[in-house]
Amino acid sequence: MMRESSLLCAVKRSYKKTMNSQHPYPRYPNLIKNRAVSAINEVWVADITYIRIATSFVYLAVILDSFSRKVVGYAMSNRLDTELALAALKMALGERQPLPGCIHHSDQGVQNASHEYIKELKHRGFLISMARTGIPL
Image 1 (cartoon, rainbow, N blue to C red):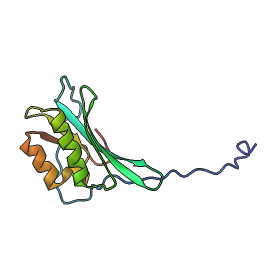
Image 2 (image 1 turned 90 degrees about the horizontal axis):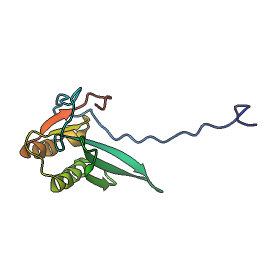
Image 3 (image 1 turned 180 degrees about the vertical axis):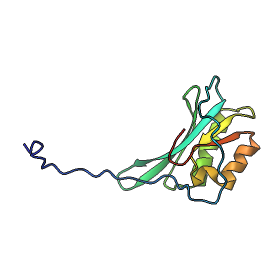
Image 4 (image 1 turned 30 degrees about the vertical axis):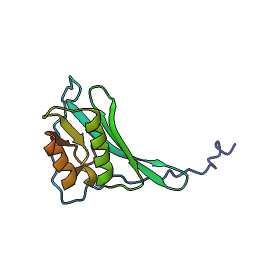
C-alpha cells in the first residue's frame, strides 16, 4: 500500500571516491581501445574499488589478465594509496613474468600514475596505457 501511494523512502547508497585524477603526474595514451587481445600477458588491466565493512571501508586493488580474465594480483588496505597499487602489481609480477611489451592499462588515478608505480612498470618493460577521465576503456 505504501509503495502504491509513493510513501516509501528512497535509500541513499553511500559512495566512496576511489580515483583522484587531479594530480601533477603524466597521463598516457589509451593503447587498448579497439584492440583485440589474443594471448595471456598481452594486456593487464588494473583497478581499485572499495568494500564496505561494518565500521568503515577497505580498498581492493586488482590486476586482471585481459585475455584469460584471471586475477593475477590483488591487495587490500584501509588506505587508498600508491603502496596498495604497488602491492597488487608486485603480487601479479610474482604470479606471472610478462615479457617486455605487455600493456598495463588503468584509469588516470593518482595511485597508478605516481612516480613510484610508473617507475616499476617501466623497469619491468610494460607499455603504459590509461583510459580517459570518466571512461574505463
